[in-house]
Image 1: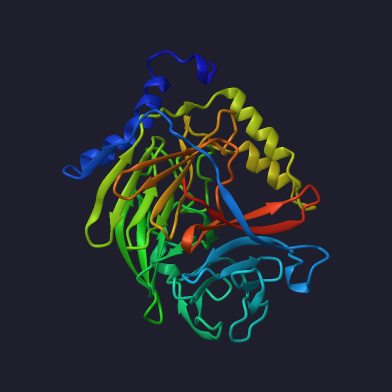
Image 2: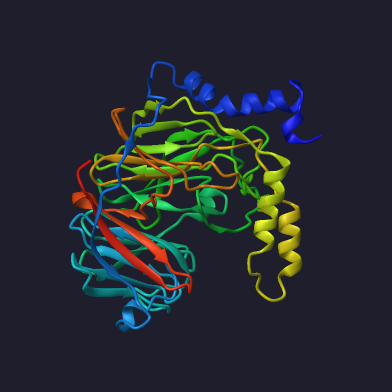
Length: 399
């Protein structure tokens, strides 16, 4: 029986409960918190982005012949940090795109990286690199000089480490279980999870100290990749978060459109909702996603492993509405919704404020920024048909 022809009993009822379950769970658990219902009707914004500069060229200077730009970030002064994952270099450029300095490089010396796929920049310009080769966060000062390492405390999190974003107050990071995984190591007697915690990671000691500031919703019956045995569900609710300038965290954890606002020490204090409905996953969508993954290049010798991976994919009952979330240094929350196509993650982008104002939406086709800076600066990682990457910095003009 196809997913599109289910009767009202059984899986259809399970779908209905799952689609609404995260909001019901949150409302019950957070009774007394403020819930703001945003308009159902889209108010379209005209995209007005002024290009400031662009870097990256196969014929440019050596530093900007990028191998694989994995991530970019701004500091509070508007300097851009570009992480080339292939070379394990972080290039720091000024407000006109000129190179100021380069951090890192592959190696075992002070300030060199063994293995890393993520970094972040504090507003004051300090850089934190998650080096899974050292199982430590490497910290550099605002001048690019290496300071120290802080142990990741792998045993405290059951062997799984997740991506992170800076606490604007300094000295700490925010991270969420179930977001993009940086490392998994099998540990005996690893703790199991019934929620997806959001944690504040204190970097002031030799090893991080973790403080849970909120609990994200874990869909019933889903085994996240805590034991290394199963993948998260395809199309299901992503764990997305971003920090705002006052240290507040915005996150999304559900199939529904419900952006939670949490402040460390006080818990979730506000939920921003729009009455949009998740779309049921059909057999046609499942087949299309498997076909898409089969078309991806596979390293020699790993063909069988990839086939087994695709055959074992676990699919959600519905496609979650929120596909990406970003927060700006100007205090805005950008929420990208799913598109109209079956496998389209690049839908409209809503712009919200922490206090619950809906500023409008950019139509589908507008790129979601890869980084947000001060004075309405945004950065995009672009790639042409030959695979050449360019980083473009623009300024969002008045709406």
